[in-house]
Image 1 (tube, rainbow, N blue to C red):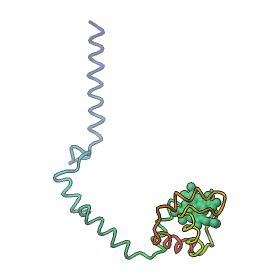
Image 2 (cartoon, rainbow, N blue to C red):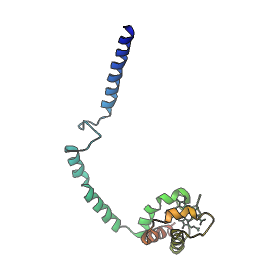
Image 3 (cartoon, helix red, strand yellow):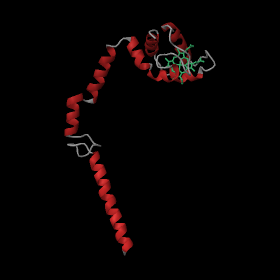
Image 4 (cartoon, protein in one colour):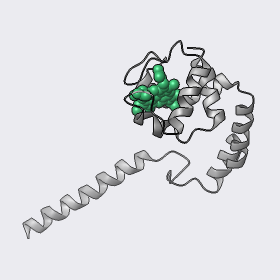
Length: 144
Ligand code: HEC
């Protein structure tokens, strides 16, 4: 009997403790912060626009950007191998390379062509690139 009481006390204490922890995670005014529907969604749309409007704004902003600026954001995944400023790392140094060098290299990799011993590392990177992507990256790397 004593064991049953101890077990019951432990279970009740556990429930009280867990409900306190979860309730402290909620955002005031939004009883369930996993869902943003109704008033929460209306507030979100008023502040940020709906998804379509956000996409349109993003496309407008991209139109106003220069090729080098677009290339700069496309360069983010390259930094892991080529260094934050193209100074080199796993991949060769890109600083000082001009747009036509970059364009030739990326078009070769896109066509699964071999340039150096580690070209295979670049095939997956260049494969999905469009001509515009390559031109933008060339314009940015030209500025490094
Ligand atoms: C997984 C690592 C890795 C990533 C990510 C990567 N590269 Fe490379 N890159 C390499 C390696 C390794 C080489 C040398 C390949 C060879 O031997 O031909 C290379 C070669 C190049 C070259 C030719 C350089 C030269 O001196 O011949 C260019 C240009 C280039 N990468 C651009 C990029 C751009 C732009 C991105 C991002 C969109 C990128 N790379 C992402 C590893 C990477």
